[in-house]
Amino acid sequence: MDNTKKGAIIQTENISKSFSRVRVLNDINFSIASGEVHCIVGENGAGKSTFIKILSGAYQPECGTITIDGKDYDHLTPKLSQELGIHVIYQENILVGAMSVAENIYVGHEFANKGGWLRKKELMQTAKALIDDFGIQLNPAAIVETLSAADQQFVKILKAIAWESRVLIMDEPTSMFNTKDVQKVLDLVKNISDRGIAVIYISHHLKEIVQIADFVTVLRDGNWISTYDNPKRDIDLTVITKDMVGRSVDTFYQKEPHEIGEIQFEIQDIRLSKNSPPASFFVRKGEILGVAGMVGSGRTELVKAIFGADKRESGKVLQFGKPVNTRNPTASINSGIALINEDRQHSGLSLTMSIVENMSLVDMCKTKGFWYSLKKTWKRVQQVYKGINIKAASPYMQVQYLSGGNQQKVVIGKWLMVDSDLIILDEPTRGIDVNAKAEIYKLITRLAKEGKSIIMISSEMPELIAMSDRVIVMRKNQIVGEIEKDDINEESIISKALEVEIS
Image 1 (cartoon, rainbow, N blue to C red):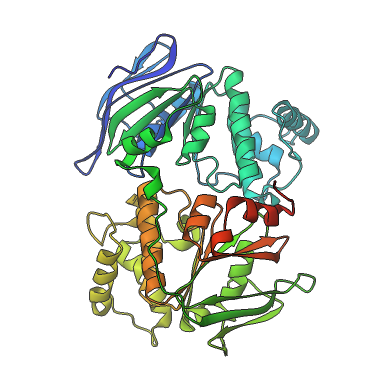
Image 2: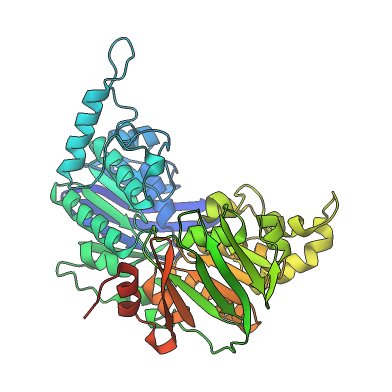
């Protein structure tokens, strides 16, 4: 199909790309005009990231043409792409934590006098004007590392706008946001497009794209599948989902029945600091306990304190009524507790190491003595590798080349190597496609069937509701409610999380 249009800023024709003789993009035609929001969707591995890296100049296509403002290019460079007004906001953090919001926005711009001194007042005034212009609540003098993930994302967006972007490419911009902050981003995208800036928006959250997309393009296995015009914001999500993976979205959140046994782990009076309220709860053998709450409610801080990754003021962990040692991560590992954290790329994996090496990392912590033999554990690695269905050329492939879903499977796999009794999952499906999510849901259910106790933090409401046997809700670093079985629904969770009554 011809996806080109008259007056487009960017048009691509027959763009193709291969890695190690594997074709990852095949004859992609695409176009976008000023002021349009064109969403690109597809599973991890569909070719979305490769395509935007070709537009940013990070990759060179093997064949095809990129047309910018009517001029043809066989490839772009990062410098040329930026000069043409194309800027990418990636999922990864590109900000300098120790610098202020204003300094991050305008890093690389000239705000220094001839003697090299920073014109700080002018910098702050300019940043404030930009922030106010887009209606964002940010202090230009605030240090970036003190900001929430949502506010840091706004800084990245403003940084791209400050370079006078004509085309803004946003890669999963709301992957770690709560519902309220997601809407802020969607409103900002609309604001940006209303000013004539073209937005290429990549997201796994299909309900988001319907709200903002003028056009939606679906990629699958490196191929163009479909492009939908969306003038009334009423695209059928079922149709898009089938284009992406060949089945309905309703099948993704199916949990198999499993037996729930006696209380296996108890968390007693965990305090994160002297002034924080105590947190106490339990989880049964074979139970999936959901943990709900807005971003900043203290969910991650609580589980990290339980695991010993963060300091805690007081409290203890019991297994079958007996205290277990969780004073630090190594002690927790030896006590049969696993923490699969939310940031797989920075703290869950060593990206330049192989799948085998990553999957052996936790097992090494339990090994007594100085030497660790990968050869001796190879059989067990193979069993776990096949059991969680990692899609890779070989177990010796570096994890940086895997899709997000397969990377997450490797993170889970390294903990399966040590056969933990309590498995804590913090945002286990963040930033992965719907098909990979379905596989991870099956894996979580399988672990519950085996009698493992599961604690699952999730900001995705359908996921939390469908997967949890019971839900505890957190607000302001304390547990404010517990919801059982048939009462687990979006209204009951949000009302406790926000301390409001929802009619």
